[in-house]
Image 1 (cartoon, rainbow, N blue to C red):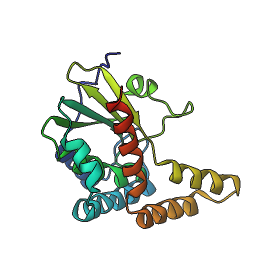
Image 2: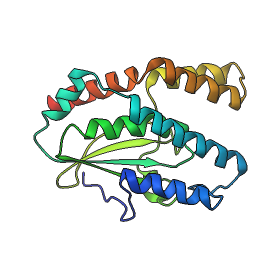
Image 3: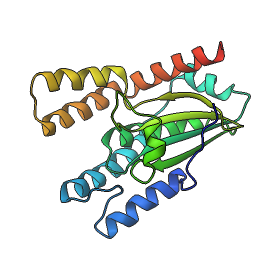
Image 4: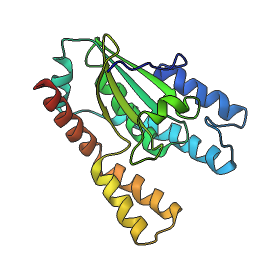
Length: 197
């Protein structure tokens, strides 16, 4: 299945610059604007910068990606205020850096509602969504919006009636402790499965 990627897409540097420029103007990406989203977006920039400096992928996954022979385009649906995206995007960038055949582009969810509709999670517009396409633009796989372990944690907290602020704290605490092990494990399995097809 061929995927039509939106024309308006960003490199990682352009995505970060867009977020910074909007923050300077007192705005955030997306349809909604609020002081809380502004503060959250600022925090997300710090999260991304921290993972850029500290994330080191495991050797098995790094080799699997380095050994890819065919070009791939990774497209990530995101928004600057998305906490999960801030945790994951530096991981995606670092993994892509192991193979020059991989290009990564970011598209904003709210700017591309039709594109988002093709990648819903249980009927919701949850992000980030990480999509891989071959050189002809044909769909290979998708991942997201978060590792299963993190999703299970959020589901337990929701069932317990925990407030949103506490849920966010718990989720980002989980990311800090997990050190990106879960996402690497899931992506490794995804690559292993895809290479057997």
